[in-house]
Image (tube, rainbow, N blue to C red; front, side, top):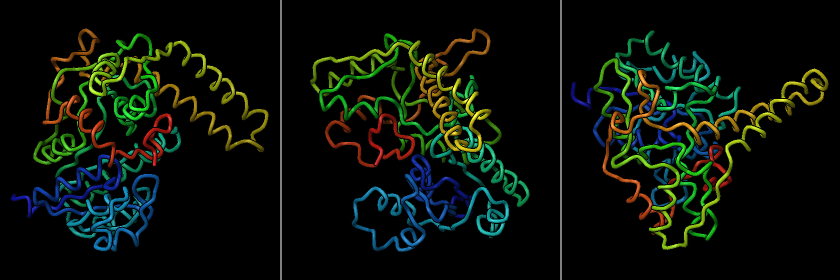
Length: 341
């Protein structure tokens, strides 16, 4: 089929990567259905009325306005991915050929992760099968090769994007250990979106991907960034063992608070449990490389990790240092409050 004859349903279409995927599908001529909450986008700032009056946002440069503009050309439908009835009656109102899921929880907490990363995604898959969709594309994460966390699909931006503002302000580059514990092949939003749209034509495959250029560890990323900014190298190594201690304390409180104070602080218990999980997430990304894992040797392989795209990490850094991080808003997935908005 020609793209114009293929109806693609995108769920998670206003999120960090989802908006780029939606825009790329539209650019390639697919018939796109964008299924979104009535309060969507980064931190739920986009209301139904905002999205519907997209023409009035045409020249506005606010982050939420930019997200609305990127849905222009799609058939925008409002509903709830946690409701099977909503998915059936609204998202699949017409025949859908392909479902693309960019869903991810806003915070990465245990309860939210299971509700969105698992159940809501499964809802879309189940209804897609029921309604005859021929293909399902899931944006996952290379770190699920070692599933040590409940939250393995966090839409956390690569650490280097979060460090740019700090380095420009003369603050230290924070890294764990000596900065050589883990490596990755960074990929830009546009390149990742293009790869996901390519997957619309790929059948029954798990496709790992990395960005163009070599793999970088945290120390190499820091050195590259300091070189580009012209700032004196200023590194702040954080012992990984420190995270173990913090996680242990939080787990202790999460374990014993319910028995003593359940009626009073049940909500606080969930917050402590989530805080411990966030600590585990931080440690995971500090010590585990985002590269293909060799099942035979249980080691990460740069050469086995495919490269894709045009935007190298160096090119991204140079552009970000020159133009800022417009469009990089992370909302609840921001780390250290950097670029949260």
